[in-house]
Length: 215
Image (cartoon, rainbow, N blue to C red):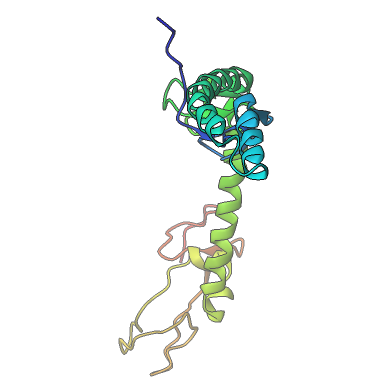
């Protein structure tokens, strides 16, 4: 009993009556490897008999028909032989991932250090670089969507307490302002240390620089 042919799913059979050729591709990146075309002896004989039949008015038509019947069986045997050879020829260019069972090319999609495909074990340096690029892209788009007045807010302004309404007339404040646009009440009252002059945070009881009690 002949041995069964072990084959993979990631291949295309490009064989014709004239000969045999197979193409294998990577499940991850799609890179393909194709075997050299191998002419079929039975296909060549049949073509020759068909041509002779046409030239000589059917003299060899019966011979051509007989040859086609022989060709079908002989061609199939030859096809199997070339298929096995193609698998063995291109097997070193691929690896099967033990985790996802995918067949990937060793050149671009196999992580040798991990023994896994790069879908299951991607290169960390590549992933970090891609993550950084994605973060930069998101920041650019976020900045582009900001209103002009928001872009002008300094970093230290975000640490200050921004009031939403005027403490005197309770009018809504659409933006950071020094005075209320409705009643003119002074909104930003900067307190400073009487000893060293350092700026005091709102509600501070002592200076953060020299420890002097706030007045």
